[in-house]
Image (cartoon, rainbow, N blue to C red):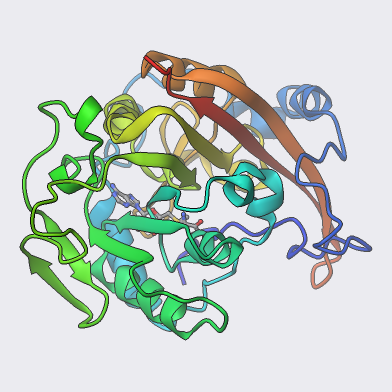
Length: 335
Ligand SMILES: C[S@@+](CC[C@H](N)C(=O)[O-])C[C@H]1O[C@@H](n2cnc3c(N)ncnc32)[C@H](O)[C@@H]1O
């Protein structure tokens, strides 16, 4: 199988002795700057550090929007084995559980629903709108959520099909106050009860309602890294356009020098800190500065931004793994 590294909670990686409930999700098992020094002085890793001038220097073609690769990935993994509930996110972003009862959340690139399930479980009043570029994965997310005990899904989970690197969000997602020309009318969305893609006015909107009023939260959990770097600014701008003033964007993704980055081979480089797996899906590895620049450029205010550095042991291989993730929390200004 091609190797999309489906991200795991630190507790799920054999994080010896750490119960998930107790694990710290702002972990600093090691200092990122020590890992940086180690990697940058190791000649075996020097190809990760050199500037990337043009695709011609590599045999592979430049990164294309990788949504088709993701669609194939989800078709191949229809068993949904990649579902792992991200319970730790509620600890990482406690505002999701402390939020007002009727909060609306957009999960961008929801996959099989690993993030959406945890959020829906946390409070009966939260509504999750979830988009992905793959119809197969949306259907699976819907099944997973409908079959998860303890979640009343009625009117609370609204998956819809969308390639965030290309299309604009549907009109009904916007907050009227911040609505701009970015939105467009009725879009494809997944009817949760019929498991079908439809193109009409969503029935969760009342007749006289034209939008759901914008999002209180947007979650981007291991999704931005899957989008070509060049397209990230416009993708973030898009997401910010459906966030209410004062709303939060919650971010978790791969950090620079994460173990999975160091495993990529020279021919898999398709850009600076950007790699293509053998199945065509992309992975980018972020520094804090890059994340800061991307989100600041979209007008967001930084509230939290840090590396999470977790050491864990792969019991099968008996190897220690140094995982690096970036945790970020950004706010849309009130005015
Ligand atoms: C690593 S998975 C993360 C899934 C989920 N956020 C989670 O927490 O498990 C990345 C997801 O982003 C989706 N994706 C990739 N590119 C996309 C795009 N251009 N538009 C919408 N979704 C995209 C993929 O299909 C995949 O489901």
